[in-house]
Image (cartoon, rainbow, N blue to C red):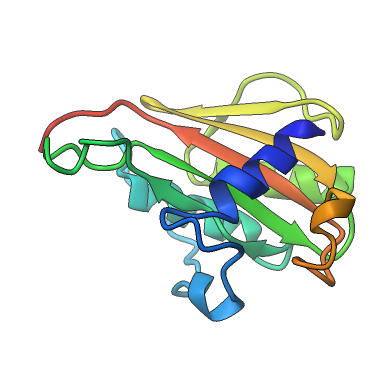
Length: 162
């Protein structure tokens, strides 16, 4: 899936600074809680919290917020997050169902069926998450070893001024 390669190169691996794949300690985050995000509009931090909760025991999270040029100066918080949940094997249907079920427990609504080879879409308020599963492209294999697959994550919400 080309989307996973693009996500690894442009989103999760390059990060905001374009410094390559972060070390595990660089992506470490507080332990996910079982508490769902509040009802209503989510912040990018709440969306990332939901993704981290869903990824627990499935893979390593490298999903990061992305700001567009000029967004910070305009005092508009990030309204996008992109990256990948790296996994030791290509995620199975069961892992994808588990990931999606966990997002639904946090208030996300599934838009369609869950099929491993398809794009999966979920929504919550003005946020949407697109998920895809694929093996790690051979060119990136040694950079992300021992991981062999991943769940690409792309989240977008409504940008509004503070």
